[in-house]
Amino acid sequence: MRALLKPIAAAAALSVGIPGSPALAGGQSGTVSKLEIVKSANYVVVNLTGSHVSPPACATQPGRWALKTSDGNALNDKIYSLFLTAQATGRTVAIGGTGTCTAVSSIEDIDAANIN
Image (cartoon, rainbow, N blue to C red; front, side, top):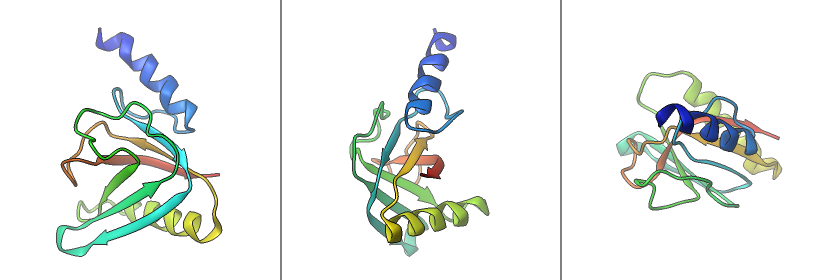
C-alpha cells in the first residue's frame, strides 16, 4: 500500500513544483502573506495564499508552514531568505512539506521550497 502512495505523493509534490517531497506530505503554491518569527521556540511560520494540498492530519492550520531554526541545518537560513525575497517582490513560492508537524503541533513542517 505504501508503495502505491509514493507515486501519488510525488505527483502532488510536482503539481506545486517540489520534486521528491516525502510520501503523505502536503504542498502549496502561492504568495507569502505573512512571516512570523518565534525566537523563544526557534521556528518561523510562513503563511501562503492558495490551497494547502494533501495536508497531513496534524496540520489543522492549512496554509501555514513551519520552519525549525534550531536544528543546525544551514539550509533553513537559505529557505527563510527565499521567503523574505518572495514577500518583498510578490513572487510566487512553492512549498513541499515533510508530512509531520514537529516545530508546531498544528502546522506542517517545510521540507523544500522554491521561488518562481
